[in-house]
Amino acid sequence: MISRATPRSFPRLPALAAGLAAIALAACSNDAGLPGPAGDAIPATGPWNAGVHLPAEPQEAGDPENGRRLLLNGDFMTCGIPWSLYSNPVWGPVVSGGFGATTVDRIPGREGKNADMPYSLNVFTAPDGAEVVNANCLMCHGGKFDGQVVVGLGNATADFTGRLGGNSTGPLDPGILDLLGLTPAEEANLNKMLGRAATLAPATVMRSVGNNPAELYAVILMVHHDRDTLAWSDEPVTQIHPVDVDGSPITDYTLTSDPPPWWRAHKKNALFYNGMARGDHRGTMALATSVCVDDVDRAREVDAMFRDIQAYVSSLRAPTWSRPVDRDLAATGKGLFTKNCAGCHGTYADDPQDDEHDTYPNLLLPLDVIGTDPVVANLGVIHSPELVDWYNASFYGGITRMVPNDPFPGYMPPPLDGIWATAPYLHNGSVPTIELVLNSRARPAAWRRVDLDSTHYDAEALGWPWIEVPGGQASVPEAERKFVYDTSFWSQSNAGHPFGDHLTDAERRALLEYLKTL
Image (cartoon, rainbow, N blue to C red; front, side):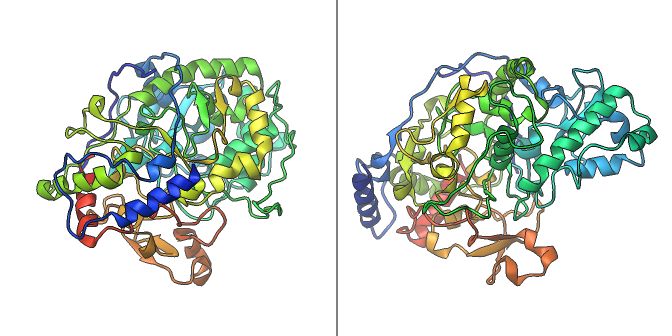
């Protein structure tokens, strides 16, 4: 059904009231029938009038081919579980389970032992000489669609509802280590991994399969690293006191987000859903892999790798739809898209491989205009502003600045290349299909996928087949709760983006058909 996203060589590209009025005008301007020719211009008035353009900033050059090699074979994770344990017939399954890497899917072109590893794990030699195994970025940014692994697609079936690293309670006693027959370097790696897992695990348990703990993971990495030296501490170095918008303490700090596809990165001038990552894009990626980085010298070495890894990420392009498309209906849908969507999401050449003739406005929209769950946008502004201060004063902030409130907290409407492959939708994964993104009044308060089979896809609604769960997570047996997405939880609202509500069913069907061509 799709072709895998592949790297290509491209040059590196260097007031609220008005917005609300624009939404009202857009909702009232719909004709009773389908609109005119596909070449209609973007209307002068729409929600995009409330957006602010985020300009491009210089990006350091890198080698995308070497970046792919490093991503799939490299030692940027710095430490890991000894290979001798992973490859042991007794301990191996335990180690794999601790990583959550139960899949046997492989990616061509990997080197040495990695050629036969699950795509989300790397075997590498740590700086201390031990041969170890650790997760790579594809644990979250390598998903499956129609049975194929797609590099850069968010992993919608990753299960982070248990503890990262299994049930680690910290380093092992010397007597137990002696029984494992490890070298001193292997023992040091094992104990470091177990110790870090014991710190990270309790704070990164998610509510549902597919929810991603990336934001919480980054929070813990910052809180437990000294800002200036990056030395690790099992006890928090920086204290945070999360509060809600009303100033009350947040008792359940489970922050829900959905990994965006990497192929958007080459179009976006600022990264993350809220556009807060400014400057060179690689700094936040390096922070995300800093679980074993304990000093600035090592951080610099990892940063050098991410120059090339970021170049590889920027070379990725969306997969292409390969099922039949009703071209006449899609042409009608293109006119609807131009009229209703292009002002925020950009325009797209008829050839999906022709990015040079696409446009993308790089707009940041205010929260009151877009109306989606505000938690991610407000994290560094209201809920935990201490984290922004830590990051910007750290080594990583010298590469990529965090600016969550310039000019205001909000969200960037994303490019829509390959949007049909990226279910679930909205920044927190609260909506199972694009059809429901375009009809906010029909969204279920709680739902679950029919199954987690990537070949089971709804080609009409563009998303995963789903079942409504009327009573939410609490209404089903405990063992089934992790499969239910409940929008009543903090950070999991499915409200907002009402911009397709005024469309007729026929118009919505045409628009969905057009999105298949992107």
